[in-house]
Picture 1 (cartoon, one colour):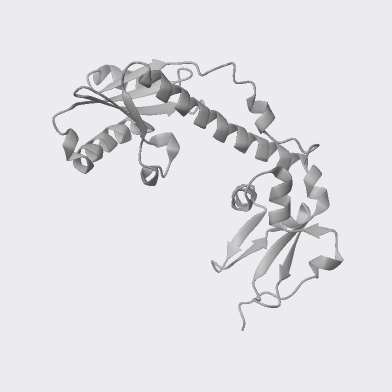
Picture 2 (cartoon, rainbow, N blue to C red):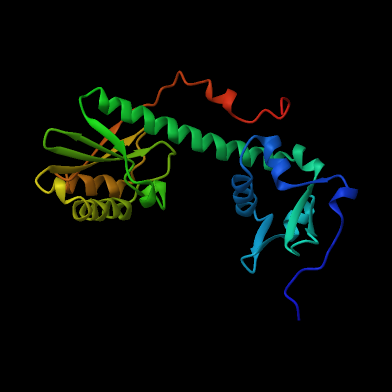
Length: 233
């Protein structure tokens, strides 16, 4: 039995649009929109080849189409989805979180530069989970500070602190040039996000882990102008 899906409809004869057109409307990349729709449970991958619509996606206007030239399945969306409040909210929340975290990282980077440090972002290849990784590396004289920036209010647990210590050890192995440097771990947070157990853990490892509450640049209200405005799309 063929694994290829059946042709369901002709998109050129309907009010349906492609994911690329929909992403352009929301002013984000198609791959980012696919990721958002996957997280929402509206689409999923089948056989690692094509996108298909879930039942929830179909309830929100999705239909599947198979191209004649490739027989690969694509998901098209009814134009009404442009006004879907759940999708609008999820996209705005996702974009806002990304921008705010990026802005905070840059804010902390500049903060350390002003203190005379040479600062760089940690290797992107190592950022499998931004919430549990080294964000910045700051160097001054014979001192290295591995910095984690936290601006999303997620709790910092004891396990995360232990993971941070493990990453420090891996950093030493991967960067032997810093073998004789004083190397410490530091959290920069826009608020106090540690659990009670995590706070007690930092007290036990004061020589290794420190933290600081640094508010971001509250004047960056222009962030809203970078977010979705479907009235201007």
